[in-house]
Image 1: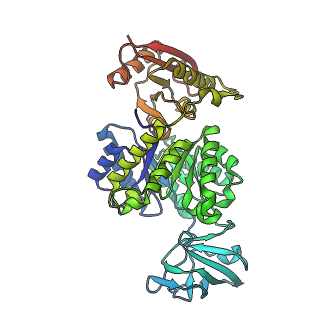
Image 2 (image 1 turned 90 degrees about the vertical axis):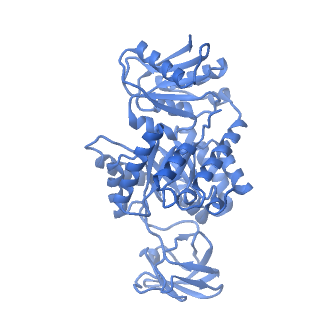
Image 3 (image 1 turned 90 degrees about the horizontal axis):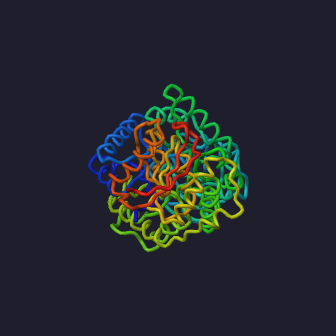
Length: 476
């Protein structure tokens, strides 16, 4: 059984050595995330080029995801690097302060905070480990009382319980970073802190303009981490190609207890709307320092897989952890075991569902046929990858092979659950293309003489959205 769930790994100091990166790709990484919160433009360009070169050497398609930093909603720096806040103490957040902070007061990277809060609001710092209550706003100073104390160090994040911070999703830095990401032709662009569909539409427009010369258009991933995004989830999904369940900041804003149900809802909605979904944040957190995960982390990854996520993501575990390769290996094993327990309910999936497009109907017909005939594989000849994406929205034990002539489509399909992308030569003759597809899978040992498989394609060949044929074949 080949793993259906994909693995996204973040590149960082622990994984930027070419030898380590090669081992990560061989261990099962499908998508490499470049975190634009750290490093300079040239650093990301160099790493992107390294990923491309090593992926070619390993012989597997690997997608690049550029993850934008988003607004810096953070406190400033402290004179001694950190302070210890005691419960009951007064603490001031001063948007005008330029000198380093102390135990009584600190400056802000986020200058709009005094206009976003009012007395009675709760502020959560450092991923919710420190809790402050706003007592008064005096000019540019936010006067608070420490409710939950602890160590607060430089540049830690600020969240407002229940949401309501007005910071725009796209900063000037993000706009420049979009140009960098499109220059190295990232397959996916992740937008941090979008509040609505307009944020995603603006990011897409900027990316399309940046890629106009090369005709490159990255797929857009909305990172759901603001409480304001939850009621607008459907419209954000429509404006995006997928979402990331970014559980860190989201949990701080809506509360930890609300996140599991939201995760299930987001995964379900994304699949129903034919979008991809990535589950992220602290999935294997203990493996930053330990060689094995906790039982709770194993269950967390397995449950995301059983919910139907396309991919599970590693952040600091592979960027800065001591055991990046072991983490990927463990995650791959957990995903595979969870997939063994999955139920297939193709008939239920299609109940009361209508398909308005010929290509989408053909994709669904291939799933139904392959499931009931016990086919060894489903082959989708696809230019854009859309046919393979539609197929991947439904649980089926039959592996889906997305064969395309477009390298960008091949790499983009690496994120689709249960889809194995393959690049094939461009052929205009339908019969020659069908024979080539079968030959490619026989060469790879996927198909053997006597095996049955389903194949979809469009006639005439080579037109995106033109899938109009389903054929069931037997290898001779």
